[in-house]
Amino acid sequence: MIIQDNISLRHYNTFGIEAKARHYTEVYSTSELQEVLQQWKGGAPFILGGGSNILLTGDLGRLVVRNCIKGREIVRKENGKAWVAAGGGENWHDFVLWCLENELGGIENLSLIPGTVGAAPIQNIGAYGVELRDVFHSLEAVELSSGMEHAFGREACRFGYRESIFKGPLKGQYCITRVMVELTTGPHHLNTSYGAIRETLENWNIKEPTIQDVSRAVTAIRSSKLPDPAVLGNSGSFFKNPEIPLIQFEALQARFPNIIHYPAGEGLIKVPAGWLIEQCGWKGQRIGDAGCYEKQALVLVNYGTASGPEVLELAQQIVDSVEQKFGIRLAPEVNVV
Ligand code: EPU
Image (tube, rainbow, N blue to C red):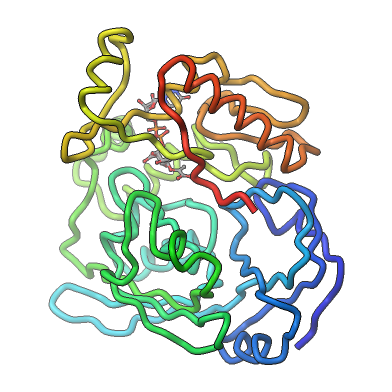
């Protein structure tokens, strides 16, 4: 076990925020993680994945453990289905590409999402009509307090919109070491209902898309709207899209007839936070080096040396102005640490 002191986390969070870990280590296997947990006596560690869904607001006085547990495996194939597992430290997009190379379908719509496989279930990653829970089978995780390995099935994970038990009651208590998904070997069920995917495929003149085509379309759409963290620091959508009661929505629609909305089930309407933020005039604005992205108002960006508190201050001003104009209080989607 090699533990380093005072390590900068700037390159370990996609926002590119400067913050230090008082102690830092990396683990490459479950047993290595268990060894660290057994030997470390300095309090509960903080598990870091790809750092693509966190906003660091200060130095971390705890031990930061970066999950680098790798491995990809087709566990079983049967009746057009494949059960596929990957280590928690695998890069999510690399895993998607590997599945596509192996002609496995189901996660092509989740192409190019930054972060790791182990982080994917924590916030039930989703995009373009598909969420991780749609293909999720099970996961293995190590309890940080005991070092014990536990398995979680789909029910146990309590998935919701960008939610799971690991963001709620079990927050900070587990390290996800392995995730298994249930994919198709063919024929595949394509999810191309999302307008932008359909338009992109039409523009490319693709009449009978493959899973690889869908992945390429998603990649093109994401690249055109979302900033590449390697170029401009960000954590994807900073806020969740709010779901409001139908009655509240109807009152809003009377005042703002152009309001964009989707049914969210059981008398609820989902309103895109990006639209609300844009209507408040924030799109393309910046305070110092913290900014609201010019092509997607839901994404906050770091133009260079923004600090965590500076990004948080911008977020707070956005929350306040959306609440003032629309009476809706936005909740963050990223994990503020
Ligand atoms: N919109 C605006 N102005 C903006 C941004 C969006 O008017 O500045 C409008 C768009 O025109 C569109 C609607 O809002 O009509 C929705 O926009 P978009 O399709 O870009 O998706 P989103 O709701 O902003 C969500 C996810 C994304 C995911 C996309 C595509 C959340 C919080 N975000 O964004 O996920 O990629 O849908 O499925 O649910 C993430 O979670 O980090 C993320 C990037």
